[in-house]
Length: 103
Image (tube, rainbow, N blue to C red; front, side, top):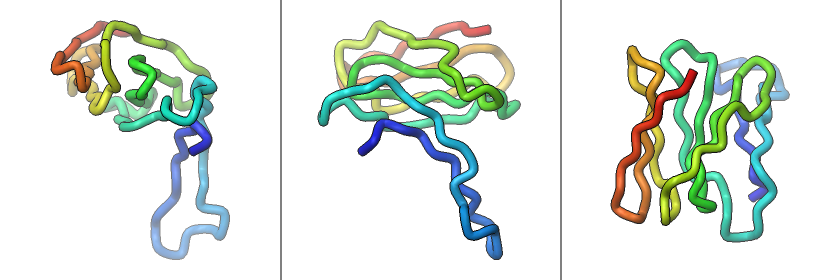
C-alpha cells in the first residue's frame, strides 16, 4: 500500500486512465495505512480513517489535508460525515466513537 486515497472513474466506457484524483496521506510504515474513507454530503471533503489512530480530512479541490484529527487509541475502522451539519464521526478498534465539528 502506498498510503494514497485514489478516486476512480468506474463508468462504462470511461477514458482509459480511470484514476481521476490522488490524495496523499502521511507517510507511514507497513502497518499504518489508510483504512476507510467517506465523502462529505456536498462532495467538498473526503475523510479517511487510518491505522495510525488519526482521521485525515482532505479538500477535494486542492487535495490538501485540512484536518488530522487525533483522539483514538486504536486503528480507525470507520468514518462518516453528518448529512446536514459540519460534524464527522469516527469509530475505532479501541471501542469508542468520536464526533468532531469541522469547518
